[in-house]
Image (cartoon, rainbow, N blue to C red; front, side):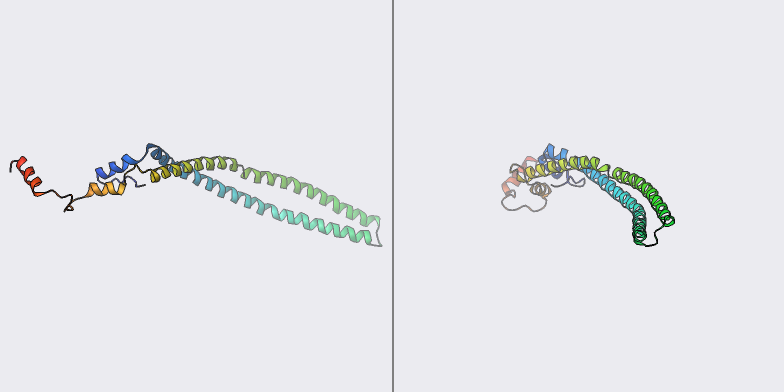
Length: 192
């Protein structure tokens, strides 16, 4: 669809404006808003992704520490259980290690629970972005439908042909040129 050109001759501009349906004009007026909405969703998605990746990076080292410490304690308990020198003193040391590990695992679980809540909150924009994307898609479907009507409607004049007619100047083609009698009549009516 040709855009209204502020520098186009008035006849060409009004010819293009006359064949554009009001529905299409209304839908096209919604396109900039749709673009802004999509840009907003893109920014929110990028921000949320950055936040989530930062939270995951922050949580991974703690996960690795808990896992490594758990494996160390499990290995030490296995060795102690299989050792012929199993005594109360060694058992107490092992129980102290297990108690410390259980306490740190509980603190780790609390920290991970908060981290997961933060991840969930960072993704909270998705409900809003889904609504925005739905509205933008509605606008785009309307634009497509109206453009199909414009393209397929045989009643509409060809805007380029209308503009070309308005811009014609200079020598005319023979079948449309004025005949000598017409020129003489015109000059006679003007008093020549």
